[in-house]
Length: 69
Image (cartoon, rainbow, N blue to C red; front, side):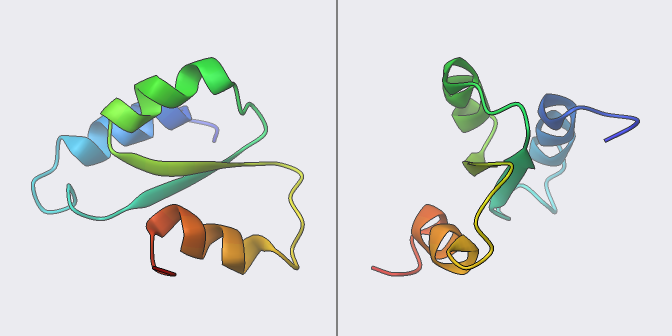
């Protein structure tokens, strides 16, 4: 994103009471496993690294959001 990075977006969303309960899945080219804990603490439901397989994307999102259980 040209203006904010993913961490800044998560911080902004987590600071807004109207949006705090909405799950966020990040699509990123910079999927660093070390950042995953920081993202979790900011309310991120999960990360999907680019490039991703469009045929499995829907299932991956369902898994990350816990909708399949």
